[in-house]
Length: 433
Image: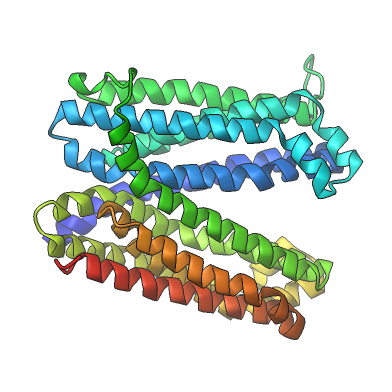
């Protein structure tokens, strides 16, 4: 039985992991082509992403609140249709909020002291294109979450590849120009993001309609706000945890930037590596939510066994990835930066990077289990406490020991997350709540 469960989880997690890598590749391409166009435009794009990325991440977390409800309603098309409709209205609401914030970036950035050259590079049209992209991305995340909840992760991978191919083909042409197409710079990046996102959304909607039972396809209509509230009560704390993490990492970036430019660059490279090492367990955790939710329907202890199977699948992959990164740290550091100070800083922090990645992979599997059980408030409390303590300690640690002590504090915070999430999951699956 365990073997069959592991094989099924692997079959769903692996396509999800590849889709994460595909989405990351698309984002890196847009940044790379803007860097070749003009540094100021890249700075303006980075300013927009500093607001957009945490919001979209929080939105994706909030929409994960759909997943346990979808898993428990798969055999009831009527109820499934209500859940899908409620999730769609939640994504519409979040998307509208995100779009308003992105359209107001030029207004919000000026009081924060952003230099005039960067603000001028934003122009008039680009913020509205990013606002459209934010709205579309929220709806797209709703469709993706639904597909994952239905166990259709191969479809998620295929759709992610379609969007990435569109970005790869369109962004360089519109940003840098080709043939009769003029170089549009940052405006071209905005057009590419909005157009590719819109096309991907249309394709996702068509795929979802084809996969849903006929009685569950009526997702357009007046929502049942009680159902929207049920999803929000599960999803919004999850989205809030991601905002807390993003805010804490921003503070760490500022703390290391105050030490010096090489230390700041090393920190950003280390964060990128940590994110890549985080993807496998995140894929396992997200893809296991339907199985945990279904198991918990009759027996909470059975849900614990499914989560343990997730650990059995995720941790060996994590350890293998950590061993590979450790063995190849020299070539990795040399590839990322020729600066000897950056390289020495990264090598010094590598043991702590591995610690952070291992603890983060433990906590995310437990965290996704809590989403499946619809017990997400404990996660928010643990994130607020651990990352709050890290934020308070970041600047003193940076002053005392540089990036090494900053990452030691980061490792302690994530270890606290792993312990807190695991204890919360154990209590939730003990039958005593």
